[in-house]
Length: 180
Image 1 (cartoon, rainbow, N blue to C red):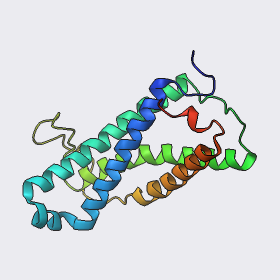
Image 2 (tube, helix red, strand yellow; image 1 turned 60 degrees about the vertical axis):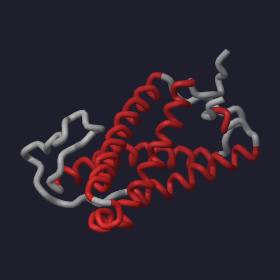
Image 3 (cartoon, rainbow, N blue to C red; image 1 turned 180 degrees about the vertical axis):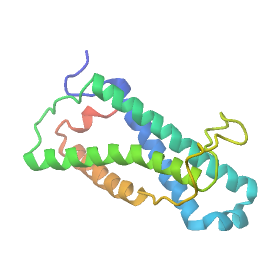
């Protein structure tokens, strides 16, 4: 019997898949930023560098698709009630962090796509669009787009910290999203 205090299994599974993808993207993004293109080529070679960029773009696109799916599931099945109600402050903080995570996890892949296209590179998605990827529409010119990765990392620290707090309190909040 399903608990009225838990998300559906599909919502919980999707949450943890998205979490893995986000951590992988943040790690890959940090490596790409830290080394820079030339540093990666020097350290790992041209092919590995190209593969890292392709996988970063591919997983970013996957994140966008998963987030759209997550929004659809959330619309069909709203969040469950809390077993033990949150305080007013906890509700505001929780809602704010969740909203910002949703916005950034949708905006970052869009920003990445625009940065890719404005940089003169094609969209790549695990080779689905062929070796040359999907070229930018004609109306997109060259420019640079800033990343929100540090904001996502900061929100994740707050989100995980709150999760650990509720796990320690054993107040039922972590049961809402845990897989087992």
